[in-house]
Length: 339
Length: 117
Image (cartoon, each protein chain N blue to C red):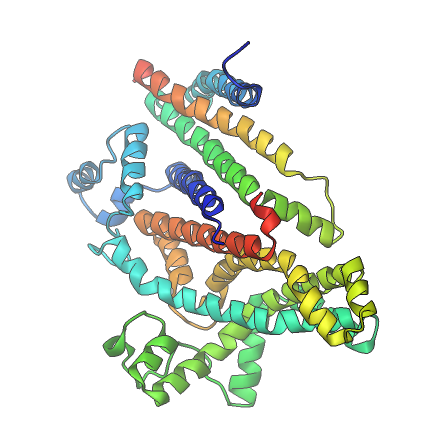
């Protein structure tokens, strides 16, 4: 049964989260040095011109009036227009261009983490204290410890420079025009929809290294969590009962243990997604992929406040939404959660 | 018997206590910024508002995070054998107090700003 009440409660929690993030971003930007009007006008602009921009943007109003206006606009997902990066373009449009890039990266990273992390965790638990277990645990520890800005260039060096089998940067070969086939903004999906296999192959090859880099941390954390969760589950009475009834070890683990062991892992996957979005900032920089992370860094550098506000709020919205999905999955796996 | 449930009264007290401290702290901060920092009075009140906004925003996020994922974090700590003594209930209460403090500052700063501006 679909947990309507539970989902509604979780959706209501979106409101304080978004107000909290909006307030935090607004306050930080107000407290940080720099004058947005001067940023737009440029250093050499006349004082009258700067004053006119200030009046146009409502910067002459007291901060509490600006805050109320800002919250009103945010409620309608209107973050205004970009000051510097894409002048006179609405932030919504800029985000619509860059968000799919980051989402694609984070999704493949997460997929990589789940596809490899869960089986490795189960294997490690089932083969506890064997060489397989030790190797998996050392691998997980390494995955958690190695930073993206180090593993990224090393993988580029190995796969692109030494072996020459994967491209170093970008989302697709520059010979292809992805703008012409844009549907979702995610190149691998757009090329698939267009049915162009050559382009699809190029997009997948470009996505492999960044997904690997971003997904390794996720994989390490998931496998570690899966192992400890599985170890706890296999000691439960119902597992012993299943074995006593003559069920094979493999079936006992997969049929009775797996679903129960998955509950805490699902939580980690959700929390991890936020980490992946954050990690995308670094990965996009290392692999020269122009996503929302790169946009945020650039906007902070040049003082494009509407882009900063829009980007951070979008991140917060996405993160909360993913957590909602995780909560629903969680309540499906363990209906007691709904109580 | 009071028509307000005790749980609501308890929470209200938490927020109101924080807000009272925030309300008192605002004029002190404004005077300090004017006297020591050399701020103009209105600019000092605006800075106090933004400062209150930091606390308020942080607390709202912390509170919502605790409500949404508190239990899960408790469970994860238990699973990873890394119990730090953090609990969802205590986190919620702390955030309510901090949020009250920020809200108090944000409410009083415009009054101070109007009075001095």
